[in-house]
Image (cartoon, rainbow over all chains, first blue to last red; front, top):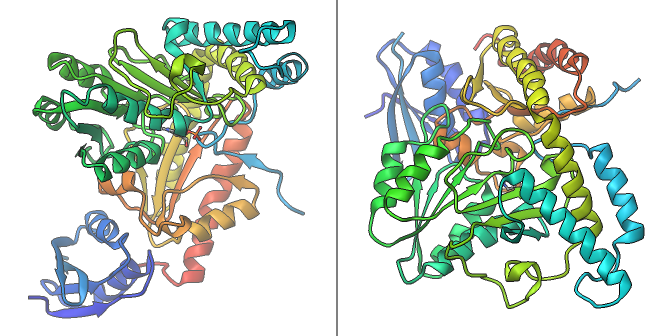
Length: 75
Length: 383
Ligand SMILES: Cc1ncc(COP(=O)(O)O)c(C=O)c1O
């Protein structure tokens, strides 16, 4: 389960990635942030951002709120 | 004062080769008649068409009667896929293709699936190179009628292991179609294919000429309504002046290809190094070594692809992008998606025979500032 959720539905690339990048330094290490994003590019860009930034991409879920991406702050 | 234009989108359309222009103008005077008729003007047109076919076949390393001219690279690709499937429908209805084919191939595959066929996409790695193990497994499955592999990616430049993929196909008797649009006229062609397509405006020929080559003995059947022109492979009258120009410029491009490849590959190396070193948070994508000589792609973190294209255009630079923000489909590029690399802020730079070192230098000098400016505007500096 995520510790918190950022709602980026309706936002186009790269805004969901930017939102995740802004939030990450504000949460404590180990926190799982879920990004809700319906722009299909998020499915590529959020994992790619995690790889570039050394954060952990936990996977995507497709729930009642649409596609969501879980990221854990690792450092 | 607006900046002088620097055109860096040869992978979409290369500026016309001077030889193409000359041949086109000459053929407008001499090649307007229908080559299928029996009078003098038609015989002259027929000679021009035959000569264009011979020259093209020679460059491709095939027989003249294996070459047909189509109205575009796209229609050639459609014909290659649908005709290759039709010719082997008794064997099965599966098309195997890489995940990074051009949309022309993928749309033909969609048509095939809509008609009840099967299409199997084979993945690529992070560098955009075909997964050969998955490919070999896929072509070995029962009922595979055709396999399709792009010779080198039009979006990221990664050269595909065509010879190995062809060997896997040959083992099980599956014909291989290669989309060679980015290779013809620039790099030597791989061996082992049964069907090949290309597009003249990629090598400096005029737009609106494609090439479809079908090797002798390959079971290929036209998917179009019957028409006997072009060996029955593509319907309608050919645009003869454009075909003549395409063939003349192909010969010219092929003659200079090795030298141009060396020159452009060095410029691309420079772009790869300098962009990675001088633009923060950038991902230069595609294979750094096994790649096309003239094409390089990178993605800038947090930057909107459309804004970047407009900013570059304002400074006189014409480039292309695989970012969804710049396309009508709102889907990220299926190529970048298949590679699992950043899809926003994406720029593809592709060079051609008129590209100078000074052009590339100016691009490299201005790019970091343009990216920084966009990041500052979007308030994403330091993220
Ligand atoms: C790899 C590849 N295949 C096919 C095509 C289609 O060619 P054309 O523009 O002539 O329709 C292109 C050009 O966009 C291409 O790059």
